[in-house]
Image (cartoon, rainbow over all chains, first blue to last red; front, side):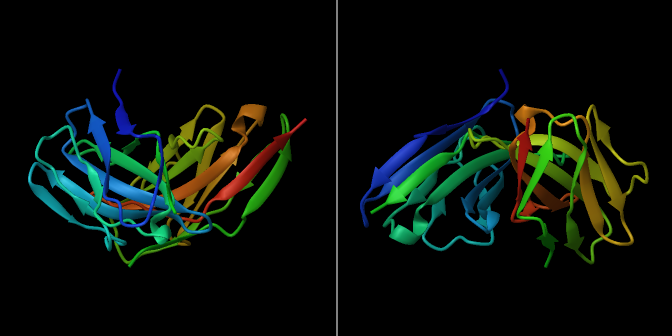
Length: 112
Length: 115
């Protein structure tokens, strides 16, 4: 089944404790993105990647890192999480030449 | 910069009735796509319908259709024969053709379908 998967789905952590949210897609998509969703703000792009080893900042990149060592994986790294990073996070992917993005199931993060 | 505005935070419709959700956007680009995504209580983002800006014909998908007014920069979603399963948050989104995967989202409209 073609899909985007994220792990973990739920995470409670404390301020300053490094964490990684994984994202994987099995559709051979070139483009991948991370978004965060906050009440009243919709979804905002954090980082994106156009292919392996090619990443760039989105609208709200502060406090986040990403890497793209393999085409299928695009992990989101929070090196020192803070309470303002409490949010719902989505990974998405799309095929080059196609405009529709496919979203993962979301990761709900609570930073205490 | 692109902006997407959904001016209806919440709407309600009775089962089997028709409802229209509004979306306006602002851009200076000429080649772009518009989308409606549905987010049910499970939080999954589900593509409902998409519209290419270069196409004059309005997109339709079963009970879902759009009214795309390019000059007015308006992109409304009409849901016909509403069903209880349509209860969800609906997001309008904008993407520039060929750019690096960024979608600009509106703030969403929460739709409640009642008996």
